[in-house]
Amino acid sequence: MSSKVYFAGLRATREKDNRTSKVGRLFDAAGLGDLISEKDLTAIKIHFGEMGGDAFINPIYVREVVEKVREKGGKPFITDTNTLYRGMRHNSVDHMETAIAHGFDYAVVRAPVIIADGLKGKNVRWVEINAKHFDRVRIASDIHQADSMIVMTHFKGHEMAGFGGAIKNLAMGGASAYGKMDQHSVRPKVEKNKCIGCGTCMEICPVGAHVLEGGKVFIQKDICIGCGECITVCPQEAIGLSWASEIPPFLERMTEYAYGTSLTKKKGIGYINFLTRISPDCDCFPWSDHPIVPDIGILASTDPVAIDRASYDLVNKQYGFRDTKLKGGFEPGEDKFLGMRPDVDAKIQFNYGEKLGLGTSAYELIEI
Image (cartoon, rainbow, N blue to C red; front, side, top):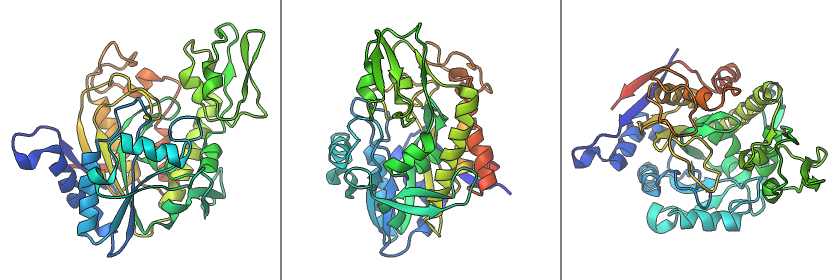
């Protein structure tokens, strides 16, 4: 049985067709308001973007969802969880300052910002899932306690997951710092012939696992927490993974955490994906690279697997931009995500999500 995914394109020739209005119409069409009861404390899960990046969802669209939640009698708050790596979202103070700097303050979104896993990412609630990798998972306390939730996602590429959509937003964004460690658990390795000892990876490592030995970086495996951030910042591309052995279980662990987060809301969760400025990398970076395809539109659903599958397919139907991180798959119908990262089978998210009962990859796309 297929799930309904609602789609709005980006063309507009009159006021009621502007993008803000389309967000509200998608919210209504997908029945997201039915997930919210009177006086619900409603989490609106968002990625505030890392300082220096600018591809994150515009806060004026978040305000439209806030107003829709208020119409249903809910009490909305904007939320995310702290990061593993040392950036401007590693603790709640810096995280909230970043959110405000990017326009997610009360004057714009008309809802408070609450960092869901506490000051230093240690506020956790356990959720039993009894799955392949985890019997139980560690979910951020305030996401766990929220009465209802809407997940707003900037759909884009991702260096380890292939793409970052609703599933990843639900998984990493719903987890405490410890939960993020559970999901990653990958072990990067340094190619000594490429390493120039610049120390870029040492600066970003959150636990000090990288040391210089003889002008080359060495990763202390007993200290490394497997966050993978060093892979993304190395200017020489000298740090990598055993992709065949490390990535499939990582994607399964991530999907199990998405499933665990979904179990915290008995009425279900609403999802809105933005297929705009589809950058090749995660919004966690302090930059936003050139998009790989043109802007497409906005989607809404109550099924995270279906909305991600629809988003994935819509991206792959586009002509890919050359002179970007896209190195293959330029033609419509060709896989853009494999065109960037041929070693990452992102479709594991769909297949394993279905197996867990998170959702279905069979969807009916309904344009509004």
